[in-house]
Amino acid sequence: MYNFDEIIERQHTNSMNTDGFRDYIFHADDSMEFPYRDEEFIRMWVADMEFATPDVVIDGIRERLEKRIFGYTRVFEKSYYEAFSDWCQRRYGWSFEKGQLVMSNGIIPALYEMVDYICQPDEKVLFLTPSYAYFKYAADYNSRAYVCSDLKNEDGYYKIDFEDFERKASDEKTTLFIFCHPHNPSGRVWKEDELKKLAEIIERHHLWVISDEIHCDLIRLDQKHIPLGKIMPDYKRLVTAMAPSKTFNLAGLMISNIIIRDDTLKETWLSRHYNFDNPLSIAAAQAAYERGNVWVEELRAYLDENFRYTKEYLNEHLPKAVFRISEATYLAWVDLNAYFEPDEHLPLFFAYKAGVLLEGGNMFVQGSDGFIRLNLACPKSVLAEGLKRICEAVNTKHTEKYLGN
Image (cartoon, rainbow, N blue to C red; front, side, top):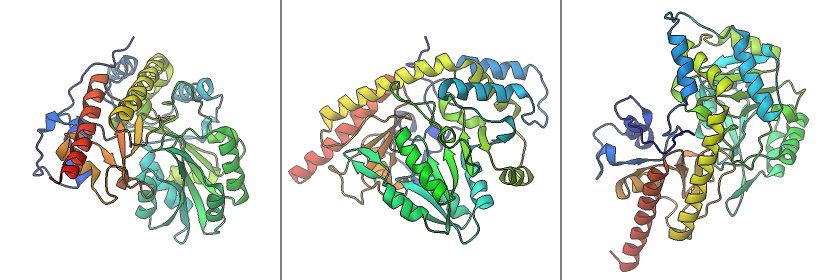
């Protein structure tokens, strides 16, 4: 049994989570002050975990360290492909050819490159909103226009508006669809019938697709992830992006798997991408795929319990909040529109009034005002304190408003 209740000190490790929040959340420098000391904050914002990376991964890094030389490195060994391919086959009943796999130092950097490689300057990128902001940023970075298809929010459960999606996909200038699968921030696991409908539209309009499946391993125990590549086994204009970073808490090691079916696009990638990898990152990722299954299953069970606790706590203490347990990810998507005005800066409110760092809906492009995203990948004791502070701050705000203070 792994100990997910352990509190691990992360300050002064150059961690974004502890040492970079002023710049990332508030676009401020170290002079920004709060009623709380930095070490007093409950951190529920950036999408890495407060859990130790599994020991089997650390052992894999240690074994590589003992080789003692860390020169220019790429994934040449077939053993890496076999480890990752076997992982996908065991969990999803899906595999791919070795020649389709290339490596990136992250899915976000891959998106930034792919938009440029795929879209002409007058072409557009399509994605579903609310959206992970870096889909928009990838378009902005490459001076490409973007198009949003808003998901339908039915009491906290999000569905694709297929009519709207097809209408926007049919524009001849819309050439690339970036698909978040499972979806961030809503946590939806797209089901087989939904994926088949999407696939029909994608094929009908000859769209390129980047399927960002970074959260696919972290689904609730009663859910099933189906790779888009399994639904579209012969579609060449599909790029699948997966990574061990979210699953095993390895984001800082900067390694991702990019599966490119189209030979011309792959050649463009290989000719323009800086094609070297960190030797310790390769060792960590391979060890994770080979030996990390037990840890992941225990993690999933722990996260399921954290989501259950969150649902019960919010139901009792913030009954007007709209929250459904996410089908995937370790991120809770909570609608607080009943308690706040649309233009209120929620991260600032909770930092000052609750000592909780979180991300607001304003970070998710559109269709997300009045929402907060909470990272539940933390020890139960931390989660309990964070939820207590959040609920007390909201209820105090409304008591003061009612009393005219």
